[in-house]
Amino acid sequence: MSYDRDDGGLEQAGDFDDEARVRKGRALAGTAVLLIAAPVALLLATGAEHPAEHAWPPPVEAPAELASSPTVARSAGKRTVVVLLFDGLAPAMVEGAETPTLDRLAREGAWTDAMVPPFPSVSLIGGFTISTGCWPERHGIVTNRFFDPGKGFYDHSKDDDWVVECEQLHEIAERQGVRAATLGWYGEVSASHGKRARIVEWAASWDEYPSDAGRAEQVAQLLALPVEERPQLILAYFKGPDGAAHFLGVDAPETRAAVEEADRAVGRVVDALEKNGLAGETTLIVTTDHGMVPIHHLVNLDYILRDLDIEARMLATGTTGFVYLDDPTKRDEAIARLSAYAEVFDVFPTDAQPEWSHLGNGPRVGDLIVSAKPGYAIEDRGQWPWYFRWLAWTGPAVYDASASLRASHGYPPGTAPVNGVLYAWGDGVRPGEKVEEVRAIDVHPTVAALLGIAPGEPVDGVVARGLLADDA
Ligand SMILES: [Zn+2]
Image (cartoon, rainbow, N blue to C red):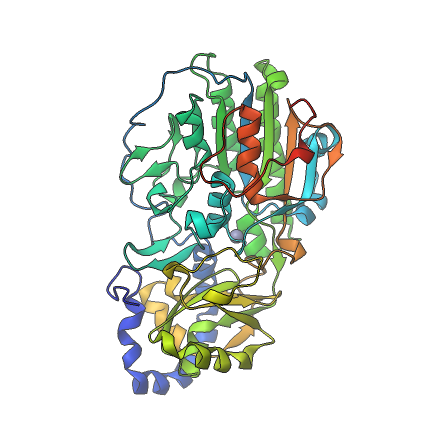
């Protein structure tokens, strides 16, 4: 495997050769770790999901307008579909908060507390899976950060150019004559093709993302447009309670407040639907990319690889790490050495993945997949500013997380708290129904069915019939 070592973000590899200097520095570093734990925790905090160092979304400067749009006409069905995706909205959080609007959606519509994300259960992979209806092995966004031998370093990008196969919801809509609007959505812009929907609320950086209240206002404004301009499909991303839950805990008052703000945001959209007389002809779907699991320890996989003399580079997000071996023929040896940490994480060779993993065999996944046990998260110090990266070379291998991170996600499906919530309400929805589960891959075909259009080609999910009224 020959990834470009000079690629952006990989400069950590440069000094790895200076073994002696590094080992000598370890004793000092141990003290330093304690002294700067707090600021680093903060940096880790801001970087854990959305690193400030890298442009996020990626550098797609002022995307061009949607190039070719079919004749403006509403689709065969008259129905409008609005999808609101809140980052990290876990069932336990909703249960612990005052959520009158979500409660109403559950009472009057169909819902589940098992919206099953793909593996790893992290935001980018989840969002692209929801939007395309494909497993990551097809759409190619295999986690939040990975290497691609041709394209280089992927880091939290929503650029549609990274998608290998499959179509986004807004693409199939526009292709079939359904006006679409995307607000901070996955694959809404492309470096090569510009905007991928007629209306795109695109932000150049994470800091420019609106609050959930602000995002709800944007959705409400779209719903107030005259019928000839109003989008028939609206896909909106909300920051949700993810950040608060990560750094303050699933049960923290701030997390509860964030969930209640999310509920008010949904309320604002419901209000707009009712005020504009659209409630009877609209399906509202409120969902998330993943749940949230309390953690107690962090795993320094960079250090472990060095300590076990495994020559490799790794990238990690949440609870999953991809290991790219310098010499892939040493794979079995690496697995044997890493088995010393069997209580902390599982290790899968890429070509022998468990049946629930749909990451495929491509080079983006690396040679080994390291999946932490519940309660452990894997940190990637390569996300830290360059002047802190030397800390990756210091121990300890596993250490208490309470100073920095309280909760994480990324665990395999079957780890119940990584599931999220999904509510469907309004036109075409079976009222008063709780369904056992809905998979992330099923959202795309379900939205297509509600719009009366064909799903993308290819697609892995199926229509979630349990959510829908018999005549939908
Ligand atoms: Zn998160």
